[in-house]
Length: 263
Picture (cartoon, one colour):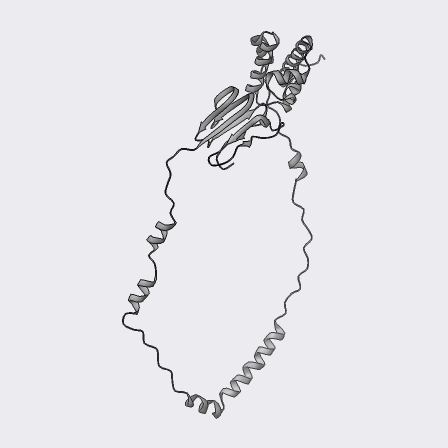
């Protein structure tokens, strides 16, 4: 019985491996190292190395894999359309379950025995005290003691006490008005910049908004829902309103990073 056909996933992996091998061979034909080619293309060397190996687990989403193959093929003198077509359908990378395995379940410590409280001694003492008080109340001495102190008169409030109470308490509407902050209608604007040309992609609510080289500055209005994917996150500066610029991430932070104002 002959061997059956390999699954489609292996076919797509094979296409990615073949494309990566051709890119590596063409890079070597141009006497370029991975570091040199990555610097020329303004991308991370980890991405280039993973692409040449066909390691889909270390690469971004399929749409960006195709964009990388197209850019590299054009730069190295290959037929970009043919190389992208040879990729076929790229499978999505399987998420790692290291954290799930490491934390498969909370450890349950043996419950410590808590000493039970016995209320019987306190009840016995309370009973004795109650009997003593009852016996003392029944004596004539207590009656004489009560007669010596006439009943206290209730203090009368002034007629305008209600007015004083109302005047002393501030109105709730005034407190709310003092604490409320004026609403601002000014739209938030973030500025991203790069000291040298760097490849990025922007998407808003999952829809690609920009893909290409960032050279200089670019303003992003209403950054909530906007994410950035950079080939060199360490070269990207993000400046938020009334804040100093911050580096987007490290060299290996090649992933979608949100650009909201509270980040």
